[in-house]
Length: 484
Image 1: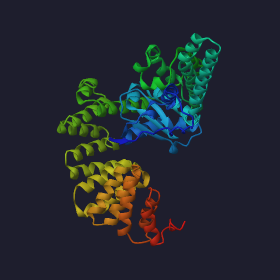
Image 2 (image 1 turned 60 degrees about the vertical axis):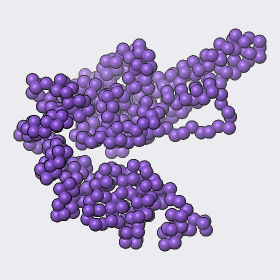
Image 3 (image 1 turned 90 degrees about the vertical axis):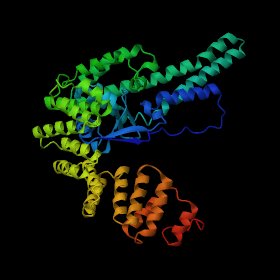
Image 4 (image 1 turned 180 degrees about the vertical axis):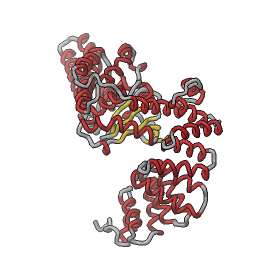
């Protein structure tokens, strides 16, 4: 499992207006932005999200979600599922077909059906284009606000200062009611869409009803005390009952999770808890008396994180004795050995995980990293091959480009090393740094080679200066910007 920081998606900046707004109107604008931007609370956050990558968990989530995506008319391969390392209960969609699930939400679902229900609800927002139309609610709220201000002005002119003051005081309240009504309409629409998608996929919608029912008490909490999910997804008894009535009428309502699906869900929850909680908490949640597979898996992770390496390896080897063809346990063994500075011993474990699941890019990257860390010149080419095969599937993985840059540098291929560094910065959205490395790469790569052209492309899309463009023009790569 890998943790990484990634900038949270942001709503586009508001258009600037010639009209000078009063402080009260500006305050309303800020309030409406906070209410609307997610259909998710993270849309308004400035801090980067802590994203988790784990091949096993991602596979389980897609296995759960893909039938819902298909039922909604979406291509599962085009929908990116992101796991956010945050214990708060939250889920949201952003930036097109991107679904974000907090670890705190996943671990609070009791079964796959509940989690699939939440995914179906968010798919309703995604397929319904709610994010793209979210500014409509803000416009409606602003219209209500300005209309109330207009009434206040009329009352003042008519000689009713008390009425004018009351209307002025209540203007933001009425605007808030407008925007909450808009949000609740979208939430109800997403609920109904979720039921439709689940029925098409022959999945029960009972889980979504159960999930909301479990948090019915959120209705009485003030906004600050609610989970982020229920701040941006207002929960009411009427909404739950409307959902229950529609869901109970569906032919698949009585369907239940298969034992295999429940087992995978339990493994996912145990693994997330073990990696995100303190080891001591994991030992409490999964005591030695619990001999089930998820519990032993969680304890192996906790021992490794608690630096009890030999106990972790012993328990991992015991799990492998029972499940010799589980690529994810092999991955865990390789991770344990690699992170305690034994990459040569980690290599066979990572190699076995790749053999068992050759289409998983992160597993290939693990193997490439282990080979690179052995500092054996004879293994450099294989390390490069494995990392490149990983990047062929996930070209936007910055860490893979970092590893590739290190591998090429060690091989004495300076141009390729700098091109890989440019790719890393480009994947991170660091335009200036990407352009700098790409310009350096071009000086060391054979002119007009595919790699040289790729470096040139990175320069051209990374905010090149006029001097950069002139340099490219002198060699004929682009037209002279001055003559244009």
